Length: 133
Image (cartoon, rainbow, N blue to C red; front, side, top):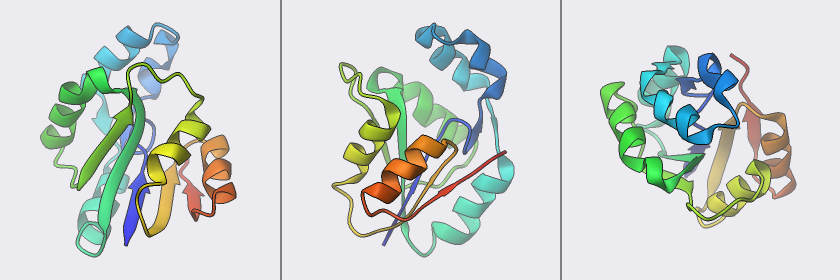
């Protein structure tokens, strides 16, 4: 069984840098300074990661993989796989996340902060919950 979890605003406290959008390079570069959302990290690490595979799906472009992996390691976030937006893929987040999640089977649950993404997961037959921090 697989749990799919979002990164920004779900595991990483990214709200402080939202003012940087749409300068996406500055926005993602600054993500190295995000604090972890500790209750969500603890939920993933202490409960889920021992029972299921945890796949982190983010719409951060692939070019930010090393920065993202460094952040996950620094904050001891236990995931089994990191799936990122292909650098040349500009689909909207709901469509992209469903497409990135589809190869994983069976997905027990998807966790995301965005309502439109949760609705898209549900429409694709993937149980989903919205996190509001």
